[in-house]
Length: 78
Image (spheres, helix red, strand yellow):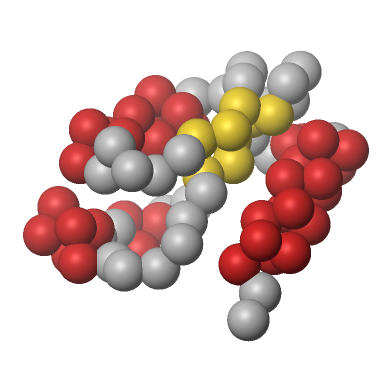
């Protein structure tokens, strides 16, 4: 957590990303407010899926999370 800021990208860098992206986030954690909403303001073309009844850590344990991952990979596989 201490070094998380090193992973940050600027608004210009975010605009330059030209890959298919879908943002998955737990519906009960602070990550949506801190990280996802700023992304949405800059990149309205990035779909966001809130994983129901999930926090920021346990969302990867939810069935909905894995269904979203599998669906995204199938849609975007070449």
